[in-house]
Image 1 (cartoon, rainbow, N blue to C red):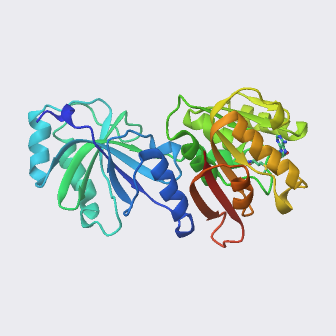
Image 2 (image 1 turned 90 degrees about the vertical axis):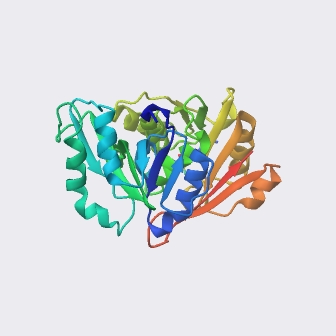
Image 3 (image 1 turned 135 degrees about the horizontal axis):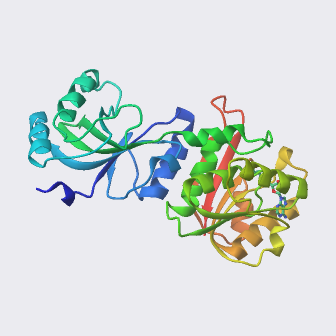
Length: 315
Ligand SMILES: C[S@@+](CC[C@H](N)C(=O)[O-])C[C@H]1O[C@@H](n2cnc3c(N)ncnc32)[C@H](O)[C@@H]1O
């Protein structure tokens, strides 16, 4: 079989126990599958860096039950690459082959035509062993560069955590960058930063001019377009595929219940899909607005479980 005939990827995820539900909801939104394991297969190509939980993606070029077949395959197919490296991909803890990872990679690397490069490789080949099968392919890992956003110049104690922000985008956009997304109450732009990093088509609105200025400041700091309008959600007249609404609520804002209901109502008016976030359980309010809840998740910001966010996906 020619290696170009495969269209299958292996992904692995990792998460803290308290973020498991968030990870499950993200994977469901991106891949339309439920995960039992931290390793899964999909035909869909997703860049791991758009997620806080996806660690690696191996595009399968060849699979076999016998390692030596890989060496033969690489030679027969005359696999060629410049500035490449081969890495053993440890998909799960306790993988005994990982201990011999360097040796395994070297054997393959010696059969690839071209110059290896270990400091800044252009192509990374991956090899791994999972449930009795050896897999060889091209590897993309989550470089976690997005964590730089944690040092944004303007922040609030009530700002969303970066992991939640990334997941909200993937719930709203399902990894489809052609979808139009709005964060109509964007605060200092935590979601927008992750949206631009991933490549989503997103804009923000924010009622308070000082806060909107800070959101623009955060975006410019990382060279993203400062697409934030100062204004009230009620004045938005465009429509969107999805809105991500981190509601001002409870102790974190001096907003009123009327304003919250107004925000939900207007988010429904301007978008087909709503991803609502709150620090309080507002299921009743959502139902009152005749929104259909299609998914739900509760997540704590930190391991201490001191601060919860509820997420509702509605239509
Ligand atoms: C919970 S904060 C959003 C925080 C944001 N996700 C972040 O991480 O920075 C909610 C924001 O909604 C804004 N807001 C309140 N009422 C609004 C309205 N009617 N239209 C637009 N924004 C509004 C508030 O000023 C506040 O900045």
